[in-house]
Length: 93
Image (cartoon, rainbow, N blue to C red; front, side, top):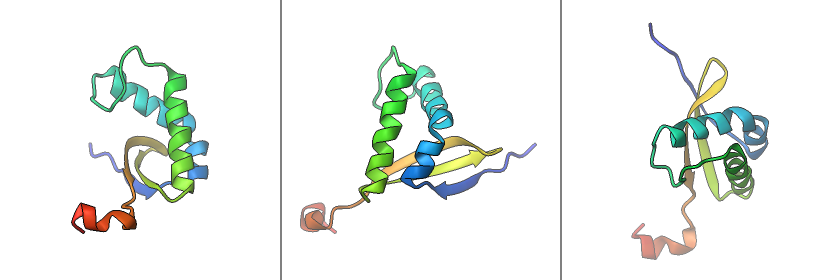
């Protein structure tokens, strides 16, 4: 059976609207041993605080959040900071 995923960039408001499922994805990753900059023991409030910070960064135009949804819930997330144009010479761009 093939699982279909829908990819989308979330706004800060959408991140806040999906706080519980995003928290569940991050908890699953960390508790499963993924190396994603968090250490055990890992608490749900730590994940919620992280996602609120991501939402604020998205609102400020500093970061993008790409989410793959399966059956209407986030199944995978990838975030990236936007390139700071002031640093193009340093970054070799």
